[in-house]
Amino acid sequence: MKKKFEYKTVVIKPKVSFWTVEYDPVEMDKTLNQYGMDGWELVGVESREHMGTYLFHYTFKREL
Image 1: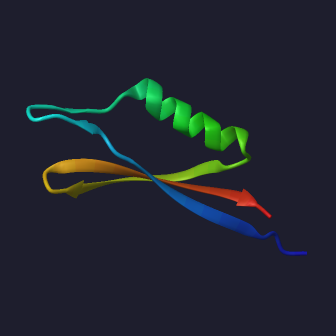
Image 2: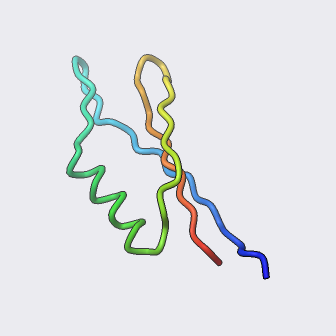
């Protein structure tokens, strides 16, 4: 029997103020750990530039 998976992509955006762009590692870990607790496995990370700011796209999968 073939395994079946579902996929989910999550974008984590930085906190942006007038002068700074900040990524909060604690908040990022909370998000990633929550998906892990829900059975999602991280399979890819991509950073993409959007209007001078990098957004992180995390791709997860889990078996159906």
